[in-house]
Amino acid sequence: MQTAELLVEGMTCNNCAMGVRRRLEKQGMEEVDVNFATGEVRFQNIPNAPLAQIKDSIEDLGYIVVQADEPNVQKKNS
Image (tube, rainbow, N blue to C red; front, side, top):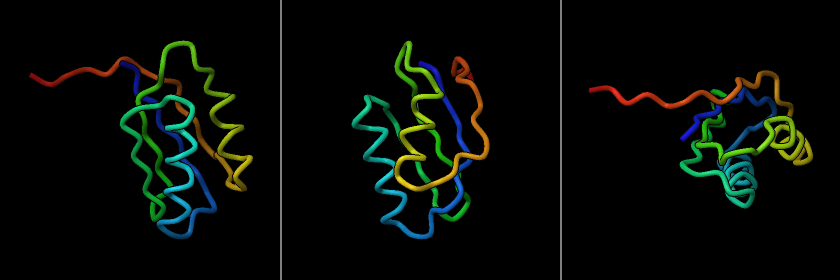
């Protein structure tokens, strides 16, 4: 799996975070974690899902993606 991280501005409450979470899950993302207080959004990216498209879908909700880290292969700690 690939983990992607975004920094999103404009989320002010749990409802904001839930809206972003639902949008990402609807697009097939897994293990979505959204923290409105810090603006951090983490999720397991499905193969071949362009990060630019994911960013645009969050911005369509009215938020600003200020940082988008390309997905990396998740490493498990032994």
